[in-house]
Image 1 (cartoon, one colour):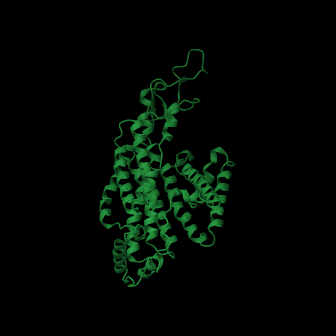
Image 2 (cartoon, rainbow, N blue to C red):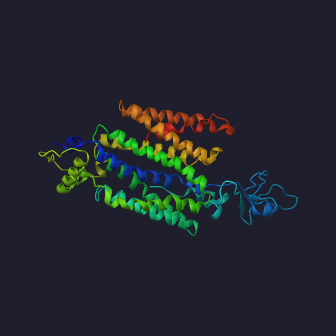
Length: 392
């Protein structure tokens, strides 16, 4: 019997796997928090030069009628010259109508420094196992996430956000692989989509949490601290039996398979064998070893680049749509659910055609946005999201 046959015999998606998926899905909610929180913590509220209006008008009504009034001072214009632009000399005053504070308001990331607000980044498991890397990623994500809330200056903030970003793939990839390696082939696609549903749930929950907590440091702390509650994963999260077998840790794999069979009400088959054959080790070099693999690798790399570029470009740019930021964030998360469900419908027929179709529809929706008048840009922006988000 090969491993998939053994898995089917002990219950390919029984109680053991369903409990495992509960543990796998919980970090996905926190993952969505960390990946999308910059929409709120890095929001840019209406602002005006501090020296271009009375101090008493600061956070109440901001006069933005002058061209580039948010970046250039009106009071400092030379007499008789109303066209020369003079940069703000004493900082800015920000509206607190929506946000109590953000990284933008704390470190004045506007005008010539606005590009710094886009510099925070996001972004391995075969050697140490899925369980170890997943636990390590969750721990580091939590610690660095909490540390972000106490960043004393912007450079430290960027470094800590980068550190959080390095844990993202560790959680996403290892949680997905660990879950699918414990699931039979018949249920594997459904199991994989379940984790995406919880990511969408986290997407929506973030809108509510951010609505209640308007201070960026408190919000960052609120989405990071719950990660400490997952410390019990050290005891409940199993290793991948498939990985154990591949690394000649047969006795540990048998013990885990026997436990899974017991929980599922099955019995581990008394006679089974691991297909020996050639246990060839693989590496990333295999992706470019043959012409056919090189072609497929390049195509997939390009597809992932385009997909991620468009998906996060739209998701992290919701503040530019000119609508209620919290409601728009919630709707974007809600759209994730039917978008992922479409994969369950179309993927069994053809992976190539469904992938091509989703990319084409998503790209067409993005192009159609260019035909919408500037004042009505939000008409097509939300419907365009599901086409891009369900590709991955």
